[in-house]
Amino acid sequence: QKEVEQDPGPLSVPEGAIVSLNCTYSNSAFQYFMWYRQYSRKGPELLMYTYSSGNKEDGRFTAQVDKSSKYISLFIRDSQPSDSATYLCAMSSMDSNYQLIWGAGTKLIIKP
Amino acid sequence: IAGITQAPTSQILAAGRRMTLRCTQDMRHNAMYWYRQDLGLGLRLIHYSNTAGTTGKGEVPDGYSVSRANTDDFPLTLASAVPSQTSVYFCAAGGTGYGYTFGSGTRLTVV
Image (cartoon, rainbow over all chains, first blue to last red; front, side, top):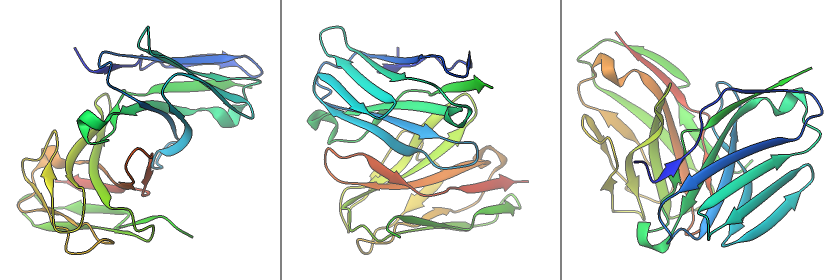
């Protein structure tokens, strides 16, 4: 079993829908949780960054961390075709010398 | 613009040839990383360096070597390329507890 599990999709939703992307993990020592967005033929770019539990909001994006359930989510409100990309979750801890452990990525398609 | 510069952008390489992928950062991060990304397999760590002068092996290090002579440069060398090394290669840099910044990638095809 992988340390970080993420459904690869693809996930296809209509424009304007609320999107929910999720990752589960097994290592309770993880402290830093991130979401990256990767457009086709580009490098991943950091989208959201959360330390420990709780929510973080940035515009149309909300990141949630539930450490008791070992579950993180990324919500996208009012989704746009430009949000179509692969979304990767990543997490780290002092135990791993803060090296990121990655999910496989979920391909998201927003249909106009 | 601060970030990671990778070169070349793409390359077709004959099997058995040696090649070095270049990576330079201007953010002064201590830690740097090399990943390969293959369809269905996600990002896999090849080698890393926590600080200049030190390197370590990642998940898939065989057939690759790295060096870290200074903070800014982290080249990846394929000593004798094989077709299974056809992939997209990403260099990244990051600080402790921070996210990584990635380069734009090198698309390598070994024929």
